Structure formats: structure tokens, C-alpha cells
Length: 441
Image (cartoon, rainbow, N blue to C red; front, side, top):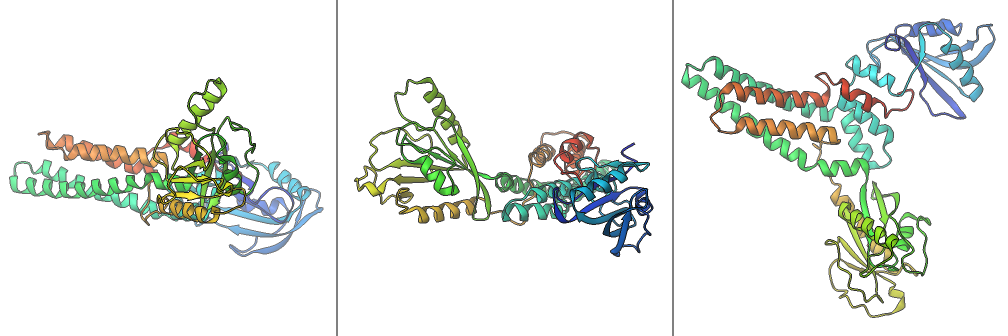
């Protein structure tokens, strides 16, 4: 019933507000005005109306709009009620709609699902819209808007079009196999197109990691010996007491994470348990195991030591920064401060922290720099493109297989590309994608 019903939902935020927007989409959208006892306005012209309940009492004075399909956000007839954002008004308006025949309260992603069903958005644009709604930083917004506005879809469809044309050349070579010059020429031209596509796929996949970092947040891990000041540095970076600070070594026993924005990009900073040799306490040993795991997953590793520390614990991997804390003690460090990536600081008096933060921001921006053609944003895109690349490489192998087998590999590659934008049957993907949407979108 829901698929054919006229759906409605509060599309603006919940709670008290000056104005709240209720969206309606479906075959009976125009009857929403009869439900509230008002005349239908001219298409796409905001009009002031007094909405009434079933007894004729005025519920609210609202702006109403009417959008006849198919040129709407969902591809269906749509209506909007811009009412005052009082919880009581919203309850009355939504309650009256819920009692109307063939009307149903929308579930998460229902409006966007209908936009997809009616060809207003493809799957890449749907995912881009979801990311637009979740974007917290400038980098995330730019990446999401590019996908939502169809730039990534254009790239995938261009690739698929080139592959289909190359496939037609192979099929021509099959049809004219008895004419050696025609078959050879068509096959050679097809291989040239496939070779260019392989290069394009490899370049796109090379940027997949950075696109994922922009979308999900780059991981910065603070690691080092116990009592080096990692927790204090985390608290300074995030501007609040996210981690417990104590002069007792080994206070941090687990990975403490906090999100923030650095250089217009989303970052997750992790404070970790101190690493040292000879630990026997099982809880401390588990904390160090988790530290090493976080270090291995880090996009940026900041190794923190204290200038008065004499431990020689081995670095789990090459760090991006070495921070020497507690410079206010005036102790001579055993590490050469002339080393390029060593930053002397004091979290206690603040010295050296601002230049370190600036360098960290510069590195994060560098790691998150994306070219304008970044199109592999989600794991689904990466897997599909890797499969398409596998089939193309196999089609290009000079292993004596017949052209029919090469054509089949090319069809599989084209199907993988079509699946990214939703040009093939993708029912198994829809539930996961649309479930991330809020009600009213």
C-alpha cells in the first residue's frame, strides 16, 4: 500500500521553530488542500491559506504550495504546507493527514526513494544527497555536493559508454571474422579504448582512500610512552577535557577518541595507552595491544615523548610527527631537536603548540587533497570499480581466448559500472542506502 500511497512527513527539524515544512508526495497530493478546507493555489506559487480541521476550526495560517508532477523532486505530484513550528500545530496537521484515506506517514528515505524510482536521481546522487545532509565540514560538503549534482554519475556513464562502444567493436570483429582486415582493425581499436579505461580506473581507485578520509574523517593517533602528555595534548587539540589527565603514569588504559574539525576537514583524534617494555599487568598489556592496533590504522601518527623520558620503547612505525613535550622543565632531551619532524612543545605553558597545530593542519589538508574527478567515495563504488577493472584486464590478456570470451568480460565490466549508478537491478542495495535518510527526505 505504501508504494502507491500519498506520503507525507515533517521535512524540517523537530521541536519548536518559527516555520515547519510538511511535504506531501503521491497521486492524491492535490487533495491535501481539500483535507484542510482551502483552495488549491496556482502551481509553484506560494499562497497564504487558513488551514481548518474537520469541524471547520482554524488550525493555522500557513503558506501552501502545489507542484504538479513530473517536474518535481520526487517525479510525482507534490504539495507543501509551511506552518508555524508549534508542536501542537504540527500534531494537529499531521494527525489530520494520517486520518485521510490513502495517505501514509513517510518512512526514512521514502521521498528520495520515489525520486530514484522516477528517474529524478540515480544511486550516486542519492548517496550524495545522504552525505550532503550529514556533511559537517567544508571538505565533506564539497565532495557530497559534487556527487549529488551528478558530476560523478557523468564520469561513470562516460566510462560505461566508452566500454559499450568498445564492446560493439569486438562484436563487429566477431561478425566479420572472415574478413581479416576488418576484424583486426575493430579488435585493435577496442583494445585501445579498454587500455585507456584501465588507466582511468586505476587513477580513480588511487584516490579512493583520500575520498573515504574526507567523507568519514581522517584518523590522527597520539601514541608514545606513559606519562608523556598524550592526554593533555588531546585535550588541547579538541579544546575540552576529553581525556583524564593525571601525573600517575598509565592513567589511559584504552583508546579515547574525539572528533573535531581541522583545516575545514573532519578529524578523529585518538589518545592511546602508553607503550613500555616489561609490562605484566594484564589490563595494561591489553591497552598496549589496542594502542598498536590504533597505530596500524592511523592516517597520521603523532609520537609523543617527554623531554625527561629515558625509555627506549620501539616506535611501532615511522611517525608523521614526533612531539617532545614538557619543554618547560628545561631538561635536555636525548633526542636531537634539529630533526625535521620533531616539535618541542609544552602543553603546560602552551609553547610550541600553535606551530605544531599549523603543521598538522597542513599535512591533513595535503592528505585530503582531492582532484576534481574523485568519484570513488564509498566502499560500494570501490568494489564495483575493482571488479570492472579485473574484467577489463582479463579482456586485454593475450591468452589466445576467442573474441566471444573477451566480449563476455567486457559485458561484465559494463554491468559493474551500471550498478554504481543504478542502471541495473539493484534491489539488494536500496534498503541499506535509503535507511540512512531522515524522515521527510
